[in-house]
Image 1 (cartoon, rainbow, N blue to C red):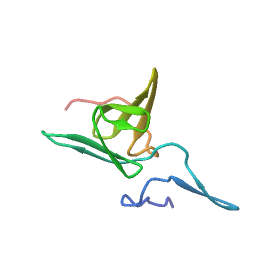
Image 2 (image 1 turned 30 degrees about the horizontal axis):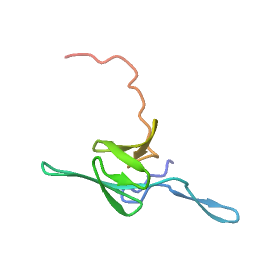
Image 3 (image 1 turned 180 degrees about the horizontal axis):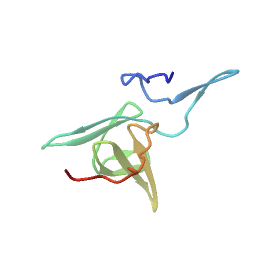
Image 4 (image 1 turned 45 degrees about the vertical axis):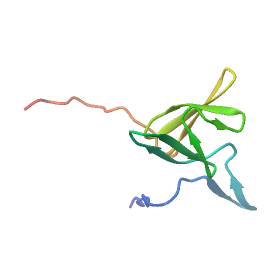
Length: 96
């Protein structure tokens, strides 16, 4: 029997280890707020607007599920759901 995951549970950012807790490194995207008047991401508890600064990085792109931070020529993508992976659809679809 497969165990169902709790959709209200926060992402697996803290992993259990034999000695204690290990916290994922790097910034954590907690929320994305998009409206007609503003685009805002909550990263490590800090509100960052589109084209705003998060430390020495600039928030350059935002979708409903992820944001992109830029430092110089380096890009870093943060996802709201890093534990989810997209899988291609297999098989043939028939039109009825």
